[in-house]
Every structure is written in C-alpha cells, then in structure tokens.
Amino acid sequence: MPAATPADMPTKPPVFTGLSAFPLTPADENGRVDTDALQRLVARIVDAKANSIGLLGSTGAYMYLAREQRRRAVKAAVECAAGKVPVIVGIGALRTDEVQALARDAAACGADALLLAPVSYTPLTEEEAFRHYEAAASATDLPLAIYNNPSTTHFSFSDGLIARLAGLANISAVKMPIAEDLDFSGELAQLRSVTPGSFSIGYSGDWECGKALLSGADCWYSVIGGLFPKPSLALTRAALAGDATETARLDALFHPLWQAFKAHGSLRVVYAAAEMLGLKTGLPPRPLLPPGPDALPAIEAAIAGLKD
Image 1: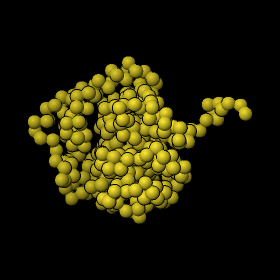
Image 2: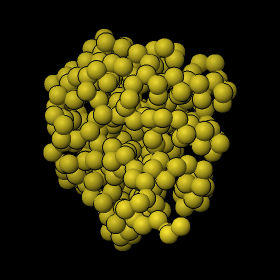
Image 3: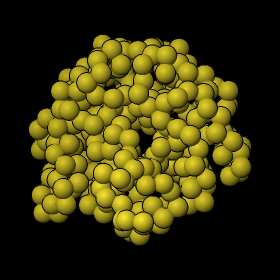
Image 4: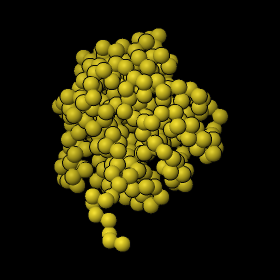
C-alpha cells in the first residue's frame, strides 16, 4: 500500500485549531448576563479574526450562571459572531441530564461546538466520566472537546480514558493543562499515539502555551485571548509557524500579565483589566472578589504593554 499523502491524512476540526479566545461573561450581582457588554468582548474577538470564541469556559464563569442565563449568553454571542468566527460553548454541570440539556440549548442557539469539563461534587470514577461524556456527545451532532482541568474539577484524564473517549462519535478534541515538567513534545507524542489523526490536542495555561504550540499542539485555549485577541493571535501564528524567536519576543510582552495571573488568579485579573479598558464588564461573580487596590498598579502596567 502506498504511503499516505498529505491530502489523504485526516484533517482536524478547524474549530479546534489556532487561537480559541475565551471572553468573560459580564453579569450583574444577581447573575443576569449583560448581553451588551458580552457582545463588546465578542466583537473584539471577531474583529481580530481569532480561530474560535470559547464561550462559557472557566473565564466565562459558566458554573456561576443559571441555565437560562447561559442560553442568553450563547444567543448574544452567536448573534454577534454572525458566522464569522465559530463559537465553542462550555456545557459543564453536575448532572448528566443537565449537561445534555445545555448541549441541546447551545445547538438550538447556533453554537458550532461544545466544551465539557467533568464537574463533580462526589469524585468521579473513570467509568462515570466516560458515561457522562458519552451521554453529552450523543445529545447533539456538534463536535465536542474534552476539558481536562484538574485544578478546578479535581479529575485528571488518563491517556487511556482520552483514547477511549476519542473513539466516540462527535468527541473531536481535548483541552489539556500545562504538561508535567513542560514536556509538551513527549505528552503530545503519547496522546497522538492513542488517538485518531483527526483528533485535536490543545492547551490552556496561558503562560506556557507558546511552548505548547511550538511543540506541535493544535490549539491555544486562551484566557487573555478573550481580552487581547490581536496580540494573542500574533503569538499563536508565530508559534504555529515554528518561529521560536518571534514567539519568545511576543510572549515577553505578556510576562507581566502572566505574573499577575499567577499571583491573583487569571479570572480576577481579567475582570480588573477589562474595567481598566472601559469594557464595563462589572465585578467577578461572588463569592469571588476583585484584586485588592495594591495589585491594580501592576495589572495596569502589564496591560499597558499590550496593543489590541
């Protein structure tokens, strides 16, 4: 049999490649989504021509919003994106039936893809996680990405579980945390050995995603991309092109912000930065509190070096 040519190779879903920019979900103190403020954020991402919008991810505070408010956010984002940039919608919830309902809501509102974290109170077994994802993937025809986020869910996906899930219809991608010991090349090689060639492997953890992309990752699921999509896209393109020098130069512009993320948490910092930019996103959902006044000068200085 002749060797496969590039044209014969399975292609990855375009929605799970390049820069996926994750905006905040502005809401009032009662959890009602401010659609005008959300659309201002989405419009910046569309204008930058990011590869996708990651709506209702951790940065979008999905777990702090009721189902009807999530649906309200999806409608507003899809309307603003107007088919120019695909919208990936987070559907994490405690119960499997709730996840299925959120998936159907997102599909009905015109979402292009789904993202699911294994949210739980009682720690999940691998079999429970598998069946949870199996049910979610069967709820719609939309491609679904696994959200491996052990820092918030306290559940880590084994390579075997990812491989098993990648065999299900509609499960097309995984969003990984920063690789252990920063060995992105080794982790990517291992994951690619147990998943289909069409399966997309991307990373979150903004301060190391340049390394991940240079190592061969398909996608950067970016917190800061939701607020500064243009410089984030420039970094993404440099890394995907294999330009290590330009990637390092662009990444250095973000370093003060990465330090603020590590010190105060990315969600709190992005809320503060958005307000400094006049985007009127309001406060983080309680019980979260904004960074204290002592932290604000460093955040302001960090964003001053970024142009969007």
